[in-house]
Image (cartoon, rainbow, N blue to C red; front, side, top):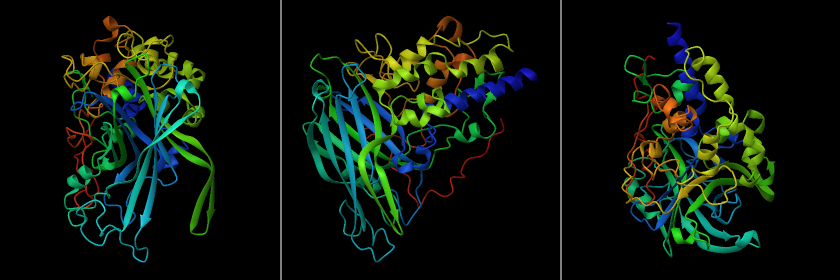
Length: 474
């Protein structure tokens, strides 16, 4: 019985620390947790399955959107700049950046109504609150003087998905909000279903894991969990760009990417009003899932969000000598006389999360830094690209950590990597190390097969209090 208790605690600990971050807990640092409109929840990058000469970049922000929360429905921050940064030569510096600037207008502010009737199309006169955005590309040749190119202005976002009376055909609104910017570039900015899937509820209920059964070897990796984020929406920005437009002159196929949010340095509040001024500063940053939430300690989490990948050497020891390994050994592996996870020299974690994996997605002359890295030469037509949710761990070279697709189960992947399955496969790619998981194996809604790939957001009329799941006893 004591062994079972220890096992329950340690597996739950793994889920608490590493399971959360795979799909992101959406509250990764103290300051940004109080600023949801600027909080980047998840980042994706993959070779587009239906347009394999392009790469799709996605960042989601503003977590926890209950679809029925009117009359002030969700939108991007007009006082926030959202950005994708591209490193195409491995030196941890920005070579290309795409910047998104949003603007909201209200047709009639003498009413509380968001819309006056059904919204049948983008720009419908029935929509009272409208948000548009501008997209700019910024190039930094040899990291010198920036060259700015306007890709699009006044692009319409769709409204939030209120329900069948206000948005009777939301799928058509979402499709209409895909803008073709020319030269193979497409963009979508608007609401979507939260693509993350994870059992956050169990994790935060005294470190509980729901599907625990040692007799069958089920420690969460075979289903049985509850997707805490089911039924919730986010704001998402998706950008599709030709691969050739992202590579440097050398033709290096591996690119790195991270998403960020910026705010001005000064906010001035008055009775019933607010204004901002000053230079733009980074307040949120996310590339690889996991690093800030778990590896970085509380004292440095906000510092991490305001730092740049080129300065990540200051955080390196947190990755090579992870605190979690010590906890795993003390609470689980040593008491049960199992081989302990190495507590120092974790070069496997460095390769997965900071440099890319050699022979897969590590660029030449790489500088270790937290980025989501993708080998653009591995196309969806590659025989290995089966769409397996476990990505590279299952032999699917198109999956995480070679980029990240919305279907990738980064929770289970991250847990197993931390448990050592790549450090020493002969020792750790065995039970229970390679069976860890949170029991949630897929998103609550099906993803679209074409750009922007994300699922249509839940409607406020049809989503109630989210209490639609039967609790499971651990």
